[in-house]
Amino acid sequence: MSTSQRTDQYNLGVLYGDGIGPEIVPSSVAIVDAAFDAAGLQPVKWVELPLGAAAIESHSAHTPTETLDALADLDGWLLGPHDSASYPEPYKSQLNPSGTIRKHFGLYANIRPAKALEGGNSVVPGTDLVIVRENTEGFYADRNTFAGTGEFMPTPDVAIAMGIITRQATEKIATSAFELAMRRDKHVTIVHKANVLKLTTGLFRDVCREVAANYPEVRVDDFHIDAMTVHLVRKADKFDVLVTENMFGDILSDLAGEIAGSLGIAPSLNSSETHAMAQAAHGSAPDIAGRNIANPIAMILSSAMLLDWLGAKYDDNRVRDAAARVEKGVFDAVRSGASTGDLGGSASTTEFTDAVVTAIKAG
Image (cartoon, rainbow, N blue to C red):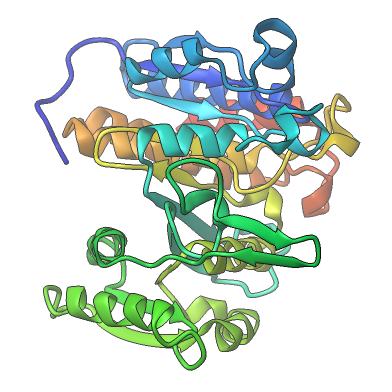
């Protein structure tokens, strides 16, 4: 994926989203700025773009065309959570903002780490795994058709959804998983339901196995999705990289986030070879919006993942260094006793942000 090293300024998009988005995204911006400064990089050029409920009011679209056009010219972007369930019609029934962006840019890989924080409240201490989720097809109907969705009702009493697995998409996500495993503990677990969904998830399992043959150094095993949930609860610390289809990955990553300590610390990166979007795995939490109590860790760590992706794309060790500083700053802050209420602490969003910035400056 690497190209020649960048010598100019990085340009990153900022999409605040809804609910707690306008609180946790600025937190991430401040922390990335501190990490860039500590790494000796030029400051990021941040480009704010309309999205979500505010964009519906200003542009009559939750994801305006001008936003998509601007994103195409940026190095990457930070996407806050959206509350599409509360949008008025017809926007509520449309593909949501994150789905619109994913589909527009072909972001086929959804990478979701789950790492326990020292000083946090993890269910399984030592958890440090990554779920690699195929992001364009599977059993989520909104990913499976060129127009509309893969859900339909032939009669008022019958609802049908399509689940689609293709060799091409599976090969791409399996390659992403094995490449990641080669940089970690060289262990990939394929998650499927081939005992029942023999053709669809059976194809997913088998193609992943075929890709595994190109990585003889990597240990490979596989589990049914239902058994995998049990294994995560009991021994999440024994797994490294999990690769699975879309819906299974969504469910497992929420579970893994809670096992690691809180869904509030669960980051994710949506990416292709050419574009990447940092997006926390959790939702918009409208019930706590505006109260300055939201945990920004998931969004912060998602931003670190974006920086690491940029470092790989441009073979830029300075940006990789900034990414490492962001992650270390978060872990150091929690270790020192700073955390929000969901982790058992009392820090506000801004207080925790300040603690991470201080940790980054301290090195």
